[in-house]
Amino acid sequence: MAAQNSLVLVDGSSYLYRAFHALPPLSTASGQPTGAVKGVINMLRRLQKDYPGSTVAVIFDAKGKTFRDRIFAEYKANRPPMPDELRSQVQPIHDIVNAMGLPLLVVDDVEADDVIGTLAREASAASLPVVVSTGDKDMAQLVDGSVTLVNT
Image (cartoon, rainbow, N blue to C red; front, top):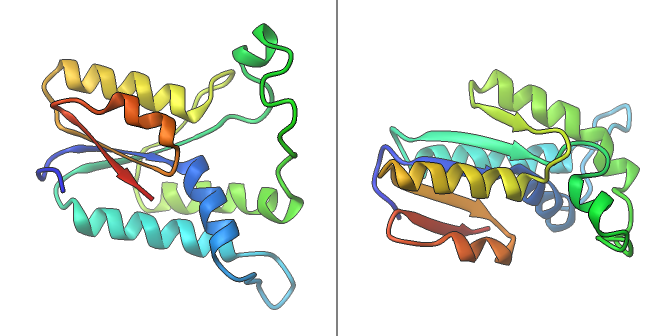
């Protein structure tokens, strides 16, 4: 575990999919799916507990295509679209993250992992300890003397 007073960068999109697929289907009495909401919020609360005094920021993919889609026509072309049961939980998760007082970042035209990579490099260059929390194995390339990876 990294020191207190770290910058904890959470791959919200990774958390979203992990919670959706790892937890049993949950819903409100009216049928609104809530499993991913519960899972993401529980994981964020755990990070806050594990890294007291740290800034926990949550980064999500923006809606729509990214600059890579324009450059590479085949980029993620075979990936299935987000299920409706998951899509309906994105905004409630954003709302709860905001209500928790956590910074939430969504950058148009850019994936969350690109934003996380940029923030991690900038913070590392400023000698700030960084924790990246994600299930994306590609993020391991960010690890250095200032950046650690927590695999969710």
